[in-house]
Length: 494
Image 1 (cartoon, rainbow, N blue to C red):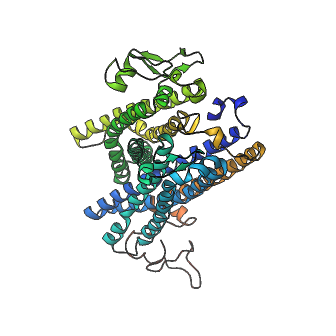
Image 2 (cartoon, rainbow, N blue to C red):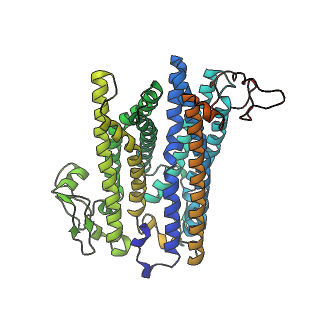
Image 3 (cartoon, helix red, strand yellow):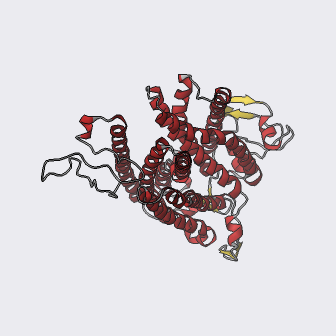
């Protein structure tokens, strides 16, 4: 776990379980965020295609994706609410002292959350109850609400990385808060766009990966082709863009958080002509074990020339910088993120080459194998991105203003360990429920697509069409209800 990097002798006993609890809940919640942020947009793209081209297959995909979007949102409510409570319960020192400065970001996220919930309800209600184009246009604000939620969260995190917009009084308390400066900090722009594009890429590759697996299993119909092509095209277009945005974000860290950059690149001493290490481990004496050393590359990447001076970890006292273990964790997370991004660029180029030459999907099974695992790889990079951001900032919870140990709660360590156990159990139950619902939806969709008569007797099929009344039920004996127990009247619930 990330918390093993802490010097336990120099920190309060409750810090370890508090960090473990926060790390677990954040790592769990972040896996759902790409779908909350990006799936509404991908769904609406498919929906628009369906209406513009009068395409029933695209309409079926859009409706099914909207169902997954709603289930995911419900699960995200649970994990996101836990995180909100933890900020106040585990880190009262930070929230009590700095909440008035950067708390507006959380307020924006809360408003966006409620707005998104309302819009999802309207969008789901609109299937078969509203005119097609009216229904579509009522869904258009959904991605905007999702982006507004991301705006609030990233504004808060960017402030923690580059705090500004306040003055300190004689007691060291923040006064004279400038809300605009507190929101639009130097790291906000690089973090926000890097995050948003990462969410769109991840959701695109994950959704496309589902249909890539179906393609590998021999399902070569138009349903699987379209379900793969639209989200994969979105992700493939964004992949090289994300590589450039990520490079710009890393350079912003170099200028605004030089010690974090030193941790990400395991640079021990300030120098020029600094080599780049791919992976490798930083030792406490400043030596590096293992890894691939590329001479001068780190200076070139940071400032476009070998003579660029890169700040090292030893530029600040040991108490004000990440430990060797923490730096190694941040470095590995950063390198994994860059490596996966580079491989995804190759996959996107493969796809673009085949499409431009033949106006068709690649025919190699290896392409679809790679596409099937691209979504999982993106989820790994999302985790690595947050590890880089949070571990590289250590020991500060507010960069150069408040240490993590100063912000932690006074709650007994035993209570926090018990809370961690409870959260793990609850999250396990929630994950099981999520998978059960998704598998149930998949079964119903398979029944609808393949017309499996035997299974129709056990499970109700999917509604007939997204727009228009249901078909009439099969004739039944007098006094008996339909076998699936559903409402088959025109305009009944979907």
